[in-house]
Image (cartoon, rainbow, N blue to C red):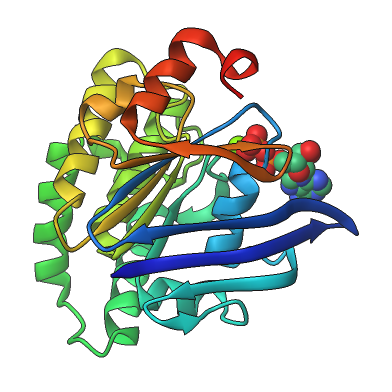
Amino acid sequence: MNLLTVKNLHVSVGGKIILNDVSFTIKKGETVVIMGPNGSGKSTMSNVLMGHPAYQIESGQIIFKGKNIVDLKPEERAALGIFLAWQQPREIAGLDFYPFLFDFHKSLISARGQKAPSVFNFKKKLDAEVAQLQIKDDWSKRYLNQGFSGGEKKKAEMLQLALAAPTLAVFDEIDSGLDVDALKVVGQAMARFKTKDTSAMIVTHYLRILKYIKPDKVIVMKQGKVAASGGPELAKRLEKSGFKKVL
Ligand code: ADP
Ligand code: MG
């Protein structure tokens, strides 16, 4: 069964077409990798799935769990089960990190019609994740992403992933800016997320993260279009030979 169907999607920013007739599917339980040169539209595709308001859908459909979601707000898509880990997470001064996480978790759980967690249960869940992600204690006193290193920002995204418990997680270059130790921690967190009931869309340039989460399908974008698709061997060929040779 297809969890996500993107059908003939045309997207513009500031009147300029960025995605030009993009179609692909992600099945329940599937891991799909999106590769492609810089500027090919990978982040645009990721942001459009989450409902980023800067991107205008000119035509086409995004069907998630059988429903066309193009008119839904980001928070409605999050409640339905979509999560996006940003390529470049924003620093938000004044937004206390841990209270933000509690509100984030509570509003998602409530929007799904489930019982909101108590502060005690939330803390237990949070502490377990914080330990697994090897996050420093003083984060509880910081503002969201403020002063975090590149790698710490990516760990903060993974913490939000665990609290969001989505059905489809989109990872936009989660592996960029990570040292080998952080890569392992993040890779293991991705593997914990991925079950037969959850799906992942991984935007990456490298095979290294795919050691932790096995891809089923690889899609290559070029100039706002799907230029190629195939199995995991396509990612290997791309890393070895580069886009110019393969496409
Ligand atoms: P990728 O993630 O594959 O590197 P992007 O989706 O970030 O590519 O960008 C695709 C193209 O769309 C680029 O030419 C980029 O400059 C343009 N673009 C993306 N977002 C915006 C935006 N908010 N405003 C203007 N142009 C944008
Ligand atoms: Mg990008």
